[in-house]
Length: 96
Image (cartoon, rainbow, N blue to C red):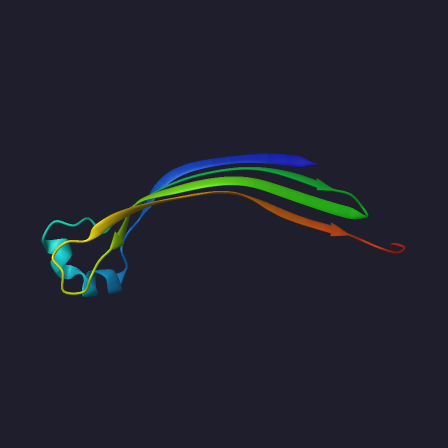
């Protein structure tokens, strides 16, 4: 049995294609860097005949670029996601 907690804050730089396709937007002052905040809490339970892993998560991005090719300005989007991941196994039969 075990549990974990993770929290982080970081960013994602735009890739080559973003700068190639939206270079005009970048030069006009649009920020193509995405800020990311994440948190997770998980619980793991495992025995000889079963296992159960449960993870609660939350993430938020700020600044996801929504650019139109040829436009000088990119719209900045914000996203949030909250959820639960469940993973389990049940072993039938006799163990070797």
